[in-house]
Length: 137
Figure 1 (tube, rainbow, N blue to C red):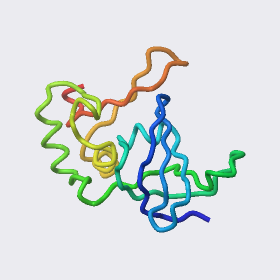
Figure 2: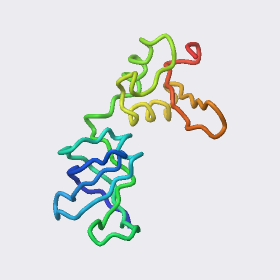
Figure 3: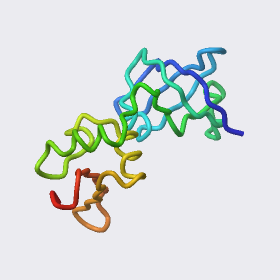
Figure 4: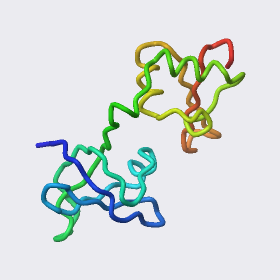
């Protein structure tokens, strides 16, 4: 059973993995590095997360957060995302654009912007780029 809870980030490891506590109970939460990095977590940050039972052997960490949910204030409209991306002459990463990955993905899902997936080789890590239109790819 999954549930959404308000969490407080308490620690971030050099690997990028994070730990948090459930605001209402203080129960421990593990946040995988990929999730932590994508949500740009920092110590003391309060966020909403989907929690599932932690299946790794740990008596102290009862939960895992596979998804950090954006607050409504963090999500830009697809039109606002398009306007920001249109200022660039070439595809950019989320970091370069200053737009949250949630807003970018939402704008792409509704067909407002272009999402590009680039890899140096078949086994390399994929890098996401975003563009206002195919004309700028």
